[in-house]
Image (tube, rainbow, N blue to C red; front, side, top):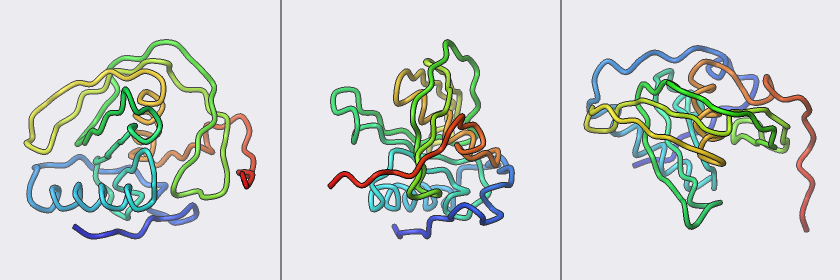
Length: 160
């Protein structure tokens, strides 16, 4: 495993649409492992492959940092949203856009179909933070940043 550099807003790779993964091979497994290490090191909730400079439809999410009881760690390869429900505006942040948060309206519940690291299809349903993270990371795979969807953006205030 290795830490990867997180791409920051303004870098072209964040605005490009990611390509489907044709086969789950060693390169994809290494990418997943590196993404987990990078996510952990940066104390994030989710990370999409374009955020580490790779234009493939791969993302990892760990909601355990914010929701101890309902924490979920998932890997998504070629994910797609198959169902949504409701709507709620909440603040979001992003490792690729440090120092700001924005108010973004997202579905309150989403259902996503994807492949796992064995190449097997699965579906996951998420509400709350997981729903928000799923939508946020899948947006990254289409070159969309949370600030594109935000009704307002503000600097993160220091909480000393």
